[in-house]
Length: 504
Image (cartoon, rainbow, N blue to C red; front, side, top):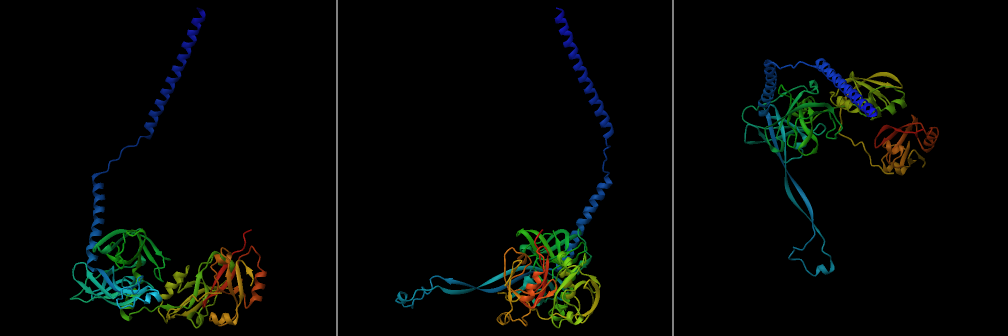
């Protein structure tokens, strides 16, 4: 009996202790939550009615800006339709089967051969443009009107089409000028300043995508100075997310003031109906327009040099540290550059007091310089700064920079040979100085540097290479893990390349 009583007391005591601990924990948690809620409580803020009204007014004001821009610009935007007759050829597999006067016995002695036939077909195109002069001058893209037999223009507020005449085209900027005639003055757009635009500003595209005239789309300036697309020689595109589609080409890209800041030109798209749009800056078009209108062609400035980027490897090889600029790979004979004292291997860091960092930048600035103007050009030669005065001349007719390429001793993937009289005649070379690349191993250092069969090596680490003996001596002194700088000739002109050494 006593043992049973003792067991009951122990059980009762244990249960009581557990209940006491649980109640204590619950009480502690409850008190903690109360303190936490008191400490973290944040008063609710209600938006005052006047703030709502202010927000609405801002949105409504922006909306009205878009409406006003569309109303102001649309009358001067035109639809451009083109037509061209092309000749298509095909092979008739039945040959002369349809010739009823053909002698059937000929088929036993002479097999029937396919016959080449041709027919003509009209190809039609569509684009946009905008009137920049009240007398009827229209700015559009060159690719919209190039080589077309017939060009018609329709104003947005008129149903009648007008015949357009091509005044001038410029393939290097993808711009063209058209002229239409009518009664009275035509509505025009106002040209803005593309240099003043900022990334993030509103951009409005107006044109005729897929033939849907009077189409307005809205976006922002996504980026400036885009290049490297191969669309034209001088690229400095404005990037926008305002919707641009086939048929928009040549139409205006405008700001909230209704000023044209660019000419919609092309898209980069995963599909035909969506993507990123690009426009030619209006400042580039202004000079082209005035020259095409007055002369029917564009006159550009000319330096007469072959330039290339100043890569980190080249900077290190020339001992230039962190210098920025462009490297002269070659200087053309009798060019303004040669007359002014520029030499192969010079690094141009300023042109007309403008800092130069990229080859495209120098090409555009030099081309936009008026022929006859003398320009200060700051260079680095043998690690010392020097300023030369160069008188810019008119750019001559375009010359081919690439010659036909065809083609012993292996080095970094190169197989070379002496330049014989036969090679001189075949490649129309003026001299036999240097060695010619006969073969390039795939995946080698030479292959990665872009050297190809037929290339002539003129220098190795600034040592002149006249023949195979010079070449052999030059490469013998270069350690396997050291980079080598080569001056190579491709066609008429030369450039520098780096052949990477073996990694340690």
